[in-house]
Every structure is written in C-alpha cells, then in structure tokens.
Image 1 (cartoon, helix red, strand yellow):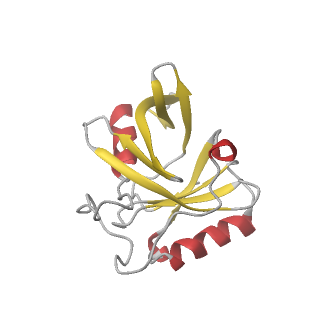
Image 2 (cartoon, rainbow, N blue to C red):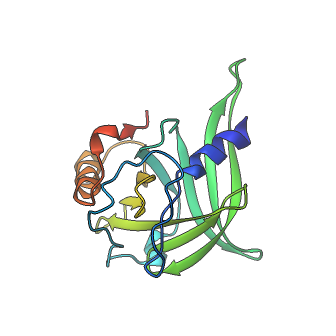
Image 3 (cartoon, rainbow, N blue to C red):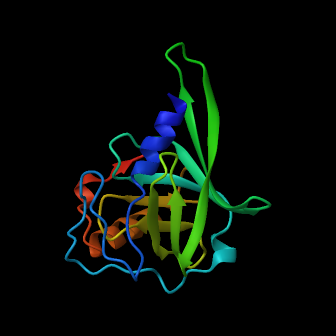
Length: 177
C-alpha cells in the first residue's frame, strides 16, 4: 500500500528533455501542450538542495509528501517521502530512494520503481529558493513545492501564475492539506 502510494506519486513525474520530443502522457493531461514551456534560468543546484514539500499538484491522489535530491555513495537519488495512515489509524513517514540523473540545468530524470524513466523540469523558483514549480512538457505532471508546509501565500500564488503561464489548467490544481 505504501509503495503503491509512492509509485502513484511518481507516475505524475513525466516530461521530456530539450533534445527529445514530448513523450506520450501517462495520465490525464493538465496542460495545453502547444504552450511554450521552459526551465528557469535561475536554477542553482546548491540552492535547490534540501527538502521540498509538495504544496499542490495535479495528481488526483496528491497527499502530504516531500522530496530531496541526494548525491551519495550509490549515486544520485530522489528520496521521496510520504506520510500515510493505515485503516487502524497507525500513521508514519515512509520514503524510497529512486535513481536520478541530471539531464541539464534544472532538468532531471527519475527511474521509477516500475523501471520507467520520467523527466521533470524546474520551471520557476523564487529568489530565496523557498518556493518552486516543477512540471513537464507533456503536461501530465505539475507540482508547487516549498521549503515549508505552510505560509508563503504570495509565493504560492506566484507559483500558480507560473503554471498558468506555462499552459496548465490551474482549476485542476489540488492543494495539499
């Protein structure tokens, strides 16, 4: 069940790199694929390091999750963590390390548990690297992420506007509670 939840979160990670055509979407499309989209020029790997909390996304099952990119002895991974409760009300934090490669500045490829590769781009990050927008060209994935689980209403609003600017239908965006 827990692995299934993490896998469903990762299914949302779809997209392409600048060299490849957009892959066939693996789920519902939330973006006008004819709209221009690109990686932020502000991306800085050192400033992007650390924990990011998913504050909103398009996945219908989006819940309280966090991730971080880790360079370790086994290579670079995306550690995706999720908070879940079982039917008896026992709750806990669980995580999984997924192999990750950097495709370019602000572009990443994650190897999902089912063996598929999924790409995502950092579309925007605020000047203080507190809030960011992740998305992809195919439009079947998009997250607003933040360093905190609360606050930053002005930055979250700006992130919604970035998604809209990049062709996303923000009416379908789900806020994580």
